Amino acid sequence: MVRCIFHIDLDAFFVSAEQALNPKLRGKPVIVGGDPERRGVVASASYEARSFGIHAGMPLSKAHRLCPQAIFIQANFSRYREASHKFMEILADFSPCIEPLGLDEAYLDVTGYEKPYGSPWKLALATKERIYKELKFTASIGIATCKVVAKIASDLCKPDGLLEITPGEEHHFLNPLPVAKLPGVGKKTEQVLKEMGIATIGELASLPLDTVKKRFGKFGIVIHGYANGIDGRKVEAPGESKSISKQTTFARDTLAHHFLEASLHHLCEQVSAELRYRDKRARCVTLKLRYADFKTITRQVTLKEASNVGRIIFTAALQLLNKALAQKEKPIRLIGIKISNLSGKERQLYMFNAETEKLGHLDKAIQQIRRRYGSTAIKKGKDILI
Ligand code: DCP
Ligand code: CA
Image 1 (tube, rainbow, N blue to C red):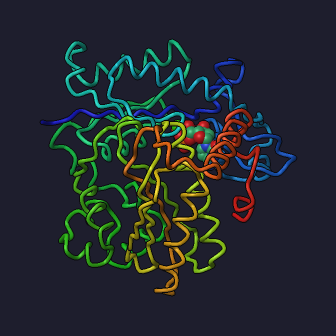
Image 2: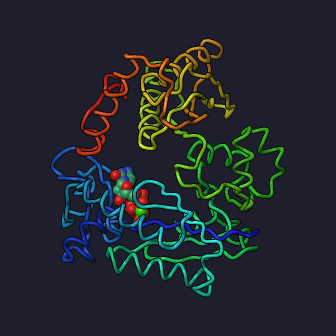
Image 3: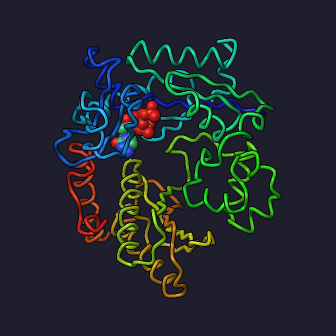
């Protein structure tokens, strides 16, 4: 069955939240990130500020140099979390099949739900109107038959945009775009493709699958599919997925053990926090490493007892990492962790273990502090290494 998927992304989210509170900020160069006198980076810039070349991640001092008249505002995370919650609630009124991605983005599978509105386009307009009416946020929506095309479409129509790629139009839409528009294609992949004479998505799409597979392994199959508008990933609420994965690609390939270890620790913290949020425990821990030549390996271990404790997951993952590093001394470009075989939180009593319980309480306490005061409010030893 042909699906109808929306990718919805709020425009300049943190800035919009501030503008909703103080309408005088509308239409002006506004930057959320803090005081330009202090160290720090731009978290969100209004489109007016972007016309001065300012973007997320830029040091505030540079943003100030580029646009001294910009209004700088310190981030207020609890306000953004509340706005995000309302945003997701509005979306859930349009389809129950919703997959939030961060605070201000979501996929919505609206297959069949467009009928009462007459068309996907009209349903998307109604969604945008409702978001604006209730939150005073503009959103951009990409409509397509799969996630990857919907995401690229919403990205291209920002801000306050709506772009529908009708079934059969995927190639026509994707072909002229640069390969970097494909999710997962970063600077390094872009460079390798360039060396192969490939600059556009269309050029990648028309390469034989074998060529891409030989160069990039499994990752090649994925991006070749994406380039052809093929993406079978379902829109899945986080609670429904059978695993949780997090990965990070390094700015530079690395073999520095302490850095790999610290990155892995951070990823394990993230997946265990998500487990606790979902009230789940995991038994399988899988480590993923992608080497500089794009060869990717995965190594898996089964825990004695299902767990949601960051330290336990990290200990298992670290053993896998150390074993892999001992086998192959090749620079690494990406490290990832996947936990699977998820179960509800109930445990068998004979497996009760005081140490595990203590670590669980510690993780929970840290999570509560982070939720209240932000993710940087408290750091464990390993986090500080990153
Ligand atoms: N964010 C951040 N630091 C970054 C990038 C983003 O703190 N380096 C935060 C602030 C953003 C929010 O996440 O408002 C959403 O990120 P987006 O990448 O969607 O950026 P915006 O919503 O600000 O802009 P737009 O989606 O219109 O490009
Ligand atoms: Ca956004």
